[in-house]
Structures are given as structure tokens and as C-alpha cells.
Amino acid sequence: MPQTTDENPSRVQYKGLAIGDATTSKDADDDVERDAESAQCGIGKLRCLCLQVFAHPNVFVVLLGFLFMTYVACTGIYLAGVISTIEKRFKLKSSESGLLVSMNDISSLCGVLFVSYFGGK
Image (tube, rainbow, N blue to C red; front, top):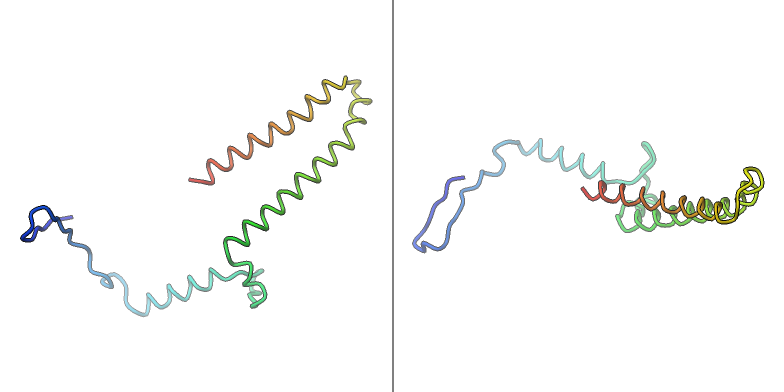
């Protein structure tokens, strides 16, 4: 971008592009309307007012956290109930079954690190 200076040599100004040259006002109105429609929360074409509560990022984070806690609780309870059957069937020692449970936790931690790293980008 070309630089211009005024009377004060320490202050540099940049010339910007003119706003509104690329689109007409009708195109801009269509874009705003399309953005507002895509920001609405709903299921398919159903976009009633009662579902608009879920169109906020904080609600999304709370619901996702609840879903994750439910998933962890269910898998933890299931694994705790099944571990004795796995020990008997494969003739494992308690230390080996404990290693199995801890590796399950470590693998989920690695998955969370991977997803959070690429999710942040």
C-alpha cells in the first residue's frame, strides 16, 4: 500500500481501499440476510424461536462439556464392570489389567491433545 505523510514526519498514513466499490447495496443486503439465516440454530428447515437459545457459543460449550462428561462416565463405568471378565477370560494379573485401564486413559488424553491442537488452528 502506498504511504503518505502529512506535516508530522513521525506519523505515517496508509491509503485504504474504498468501501462499497466491489459490491452493490443489494448484494450486501443479501449477504447480511444469508449470514443472519446461517447463524440461526435449528434442525434442518426447523428454526423456531425456542431453539435460538442454543445459538450462543457458551451454550455450545456447556452442552459439549456435559456430553463429554457423560461419555467419560459411561465408558469408565463400563470398563470397570468388564475388567474382571477380561481378567478371567485372558488370564491376566491385576497389574496387567490395571495397565490396560491406564493405557485407555492415556490414549484418550493423547486424542484430546491432538484434537485441541488442530482445533485451535
